[in-house]
Length: 593
Image (tube, rainbow, N blue to C red; front, side, top):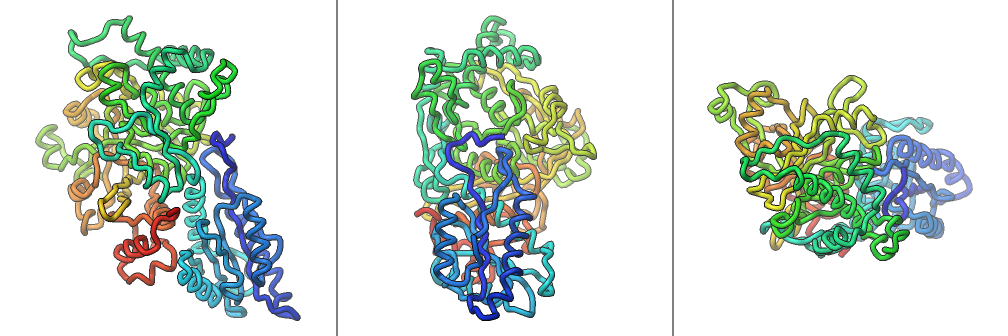
């Protein structure tokens, strides 16, 4: 398990702050205060990993912090250690702004112990007021129930907030300084593929790297890829017998020789796109030093349509393999790679990947099927979770094979796992339940192979999307829900009305009975674009916390209000949580501007 990107992984810095009055007061609090820091570190380190598999590491200040000198010493240590997240803890009163963390762009939270012997909660309020006044939004963490001074347990509600903050803040820290790789540019006039460098720079702290698709062609022509790995990859592809049925009309089907050539191309494209993202030392050994570096891309996308796909095999196989938790080299971390270079779908895919460590689903939010419509065309009624209607999530040829729902937990339930939990049996089952059909020549004149499967079984998932609004900026949409499995004959009728060569997931959002979540139709009608990023698990609350750190307002969600966790400063912008979110994000502005 190694980080494949350039730059060390961010650490979580823990700041034990204390009442600085010596001759009895400070001394009586030293052990309790430092133990709070150690217990917080233990909680984080025992429960969190990075998507690359490494455990999250915490750094604690060398001493408790009772004044500005010790705060400065802590800041210096954190800078040396590569701290990207700041968590302040205290059981007592401290000197507000003298001990605060004033580093501007590092996400911050303060946990004030809820006890009666010393006023940790009073310091928490004073500190948060100072952060808000200085324009440094911080999260406040305060347990609901009073604890005794000697109680070193962390209450469950405190654990939940600490973990939610740290996960979101680590996601922010991991994106900073990395790249989005745009292979090509605008696909078929899709606005999300008009990659906006200002958005990436100001809101995410990321670079945008633009590489014309002709670079992929050049590397194909000049054989700039690891030839030994190519032979291994091609053999793996043949051995697994993954080619599906050809649904093209007989007179439009390619012959066997052409299909075999297309397989060689799409396998090479996969290697080339990966190497463009993260580099490959094997290329330097072959004499291609510049190409060996890559673009340090934490996410990317391939335009494909139409300039490439009218001429050459499509990118569906490459996108599928990259977004999957395994390939011919074995089980490994999935990449984040967007179809049609839709960067505004790649970003929520990246959010989901960093929050859950799992592969992400890229889909068209294609069709709302009402119960009446399903009954009309199939003669059958929708039941169970699907009874109020379903949304057809289907991508034009590419989705992670993790979405087949063939990975299982200990109880046999379908799940999507972090790669280090994926077994060889899981990977084999995902592959067995996926075909790569010869591409629909009506869409892809140059050929290629599209992934074909259906998501089997019910899984909790969260769909999200970033949209850019003129005059406002980015907004985030969130819809928690479930994948559902339809009867085979119902699935077949509905699926073949769209395209049987593409991967399908049937989605049912959780309904609230109001607004955009009044019914399933309203979710579809309020979705802001043609694509959605789907992540395993109900992570809407984590996404809301992450968005608040980045100053991206959430315009649509179905998360319970008591799970919403934003910086304390948001309370100063009004009681209505949606309105205050918009006003706070506008007032504080993008994190990196």
